[in-house]
Image (cartoon, rainbow, N blue to C red):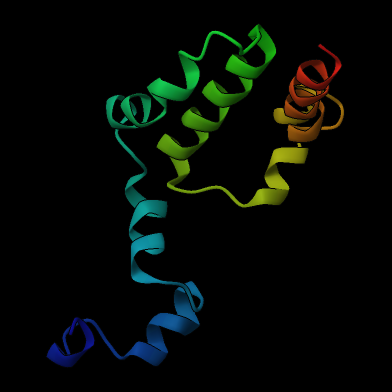
Length: 104
């Protein structure tokens, strides 16, 4: 629909300039997310009493990233700043939680 108007260029020109990505992903990468909306979306998870401080910090770091960039690729969860919370990234933070539950 956007490209039918002809004023924005063609779909092919869009792909050449921005890559072949869904429009929603492209828009979120430009405008990001509103911090309050992201916090609300994650609030139930973050307020889980079984989360430890590192896990909450990890999730808050994800929220900040989402607000700035709109979305996150899974491989980013193993790179800084996530690997600064745990050298193993997301697996080092959340696998521990599963292991603690199984050992009880």
